[in-house]
Structures are given as structure tokens and as C-alpha cells.
Length: 169
Image (cartoon, rainbow, N blue to C red; front, side):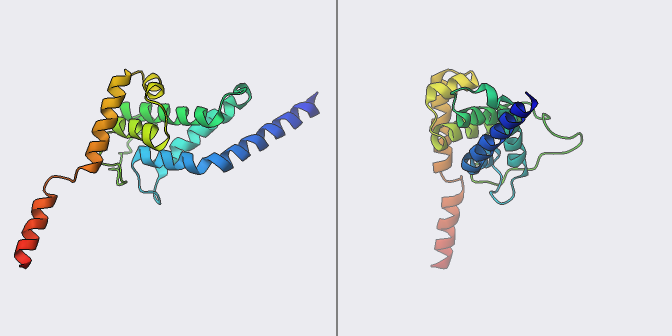
């Protein structure tokens, strides 16, 4: 009995290792986009991913036909949402958050979450709405605004270029 359990646990660990080897990089990229950290300096994203993968491993035996990637992604999104909407969740006492420096740093945490799930991960609008507890129309609006904010240049950029061009002439 004990030997059989040990063999099952070893098989479970190998399956999970194979899953992490295949999906870990993409999940880390998603976590890095969520936290808006630089790809080469992303401790919050790594912590977020580690916790999501630990939860996925704990549920591994109960997944039974459910997509483990989907489970890990949902766990990642929920943990990110809880950590950003509750500003002191997951931080040691007295430690301040640093200002994000990644490409999505101009967006709010909610906009980053919706944008990453919709555009990077390809999750349907209705699924994102259900995961976040928002109406689908609100998710659509948040995604549209986030996309517009990324595509629109920051205020003051164009006039500064024009002044520099005029001074050079």
C-alpha cells in the first residue's frame, strides 16, 4: 500500500514537472506582464507564479480532465487581482511597492489583468468577466481603453519633437 502510494506520488510529481517545463515560461511571461516589471528583473512576477504553481500542484490530483494550464492561469489572475486590489496582501510588513517599469506600466492593474487575459492569453470576454465577477460589457470597455492607452502616445511627446525639429532648422 505504501509503495503504491509512493509510486503514484512520484508519477504525479513527474507529470507536474513536465507541465511546468512546458507551460512555465509562458506563465512567467504572463505574470511579468501583469506585474508590469521588466522581463529581466521580475521578483513579484516570480513570486506570483510560484504561488499559483504551488496551488496548482496541490490540486493536481483533483483536476481530472480539467486543463492544468487553464487552472494555473486562473490562479495566477486571481492572486494578482487580490494582491493589487488589497494593497498590502503578500508584502512583508514595512516593505513598499516599487513603481512598475515594464511595457504595460502605464495601465492600471485592472486594465493590465483584462488586457493580458484577453490579448496575450486569448481568453474569451465572457470567461474573463466570469473570472473577475464583472459584466462582459465592462470587460470589453476596459480592454478597449487599455488598448487605446497603449497605442496613444503620451501627452507632450509630439510637441516636444516639433520644437526640437524647429530648433534644428
